[in-house]
Image 1 (cartoon, rainbow, N blue to C red):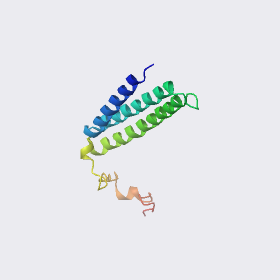
Image 2 (spheres, rainbow, N blue to C red; image 1 turned 30 degrees about the vertical axis):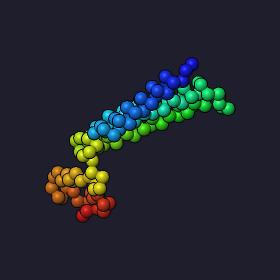
Image 3 (tube, rainbow, N blue to C red; image 1 turned 120 degrees about the vertical axis):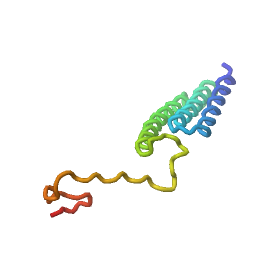
Image 4 (spheres, one colour; image 1 turned 60 degrees about the vertical axis):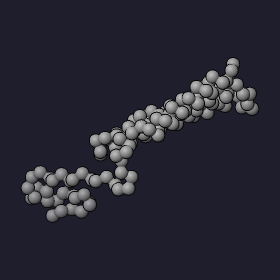
Length: 130
């Protein structure tokens, strides 16, 4: 087997993923570009395992399996962050995320009913009102 074709394909995939990470504004598309880069690395690992006789058998395939597990964990955490960003900002544009200031907290909802009904209930700080 000639390893040139998979290596060139992996290089093109990695370059396309790098372009996607650098140029995209949508956080979901950035995550997809990172996944494309990880798949290019997997292709290189499996091709190297098939062409190079290493001291450890199937070492490239084992590393590729670890990269797949890492990619699954990264997608889980990344999508959770993107969903929280969408809830706070109503946008997933990476350029609109302020990195210097914390997000504003939503205003506290007033309790319904009369003040006499709330006597004896705990407040948010843990102290009991009387």
